Amino acid sequence: MDRLKGKVALITGCGRIGNIGLAVCEAFLREGASVVATDILTNDQEEIVNSLVGKSSADRVLFLQHDATREEDWQRVADQTIATFGQLDVLVNNVGIALS
Image (cartoon, rainbow, N blue to C red; front, side):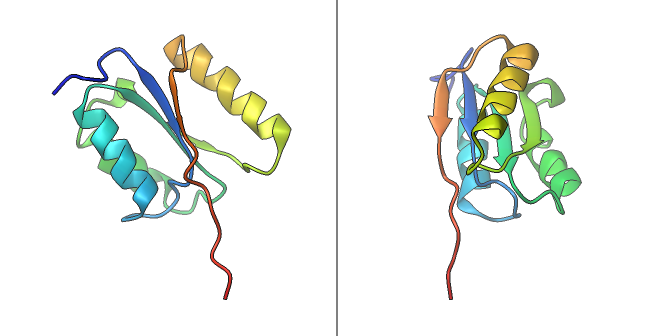
């Protein structure tokens, strides 16, 4: 299960335990990718990172606060991803909001 070995994935919408974004992160980690999990929310950041690291190694996981509506945040996240992992190969734009 190393179909994504050596790849780096940026996955948005990962700010809550048990959400789709984290499930995608876990799947990518299982397939050998490094992941950059982002969300505008950071309340559960430590728990999220610990959850992902438990399925991989700490050097393959990065969590960043990211407001996907702000162009400068996209640039900052891309820059930090490349600074950390040296590349960016995959984007899963999973961010969204729920309106009542």
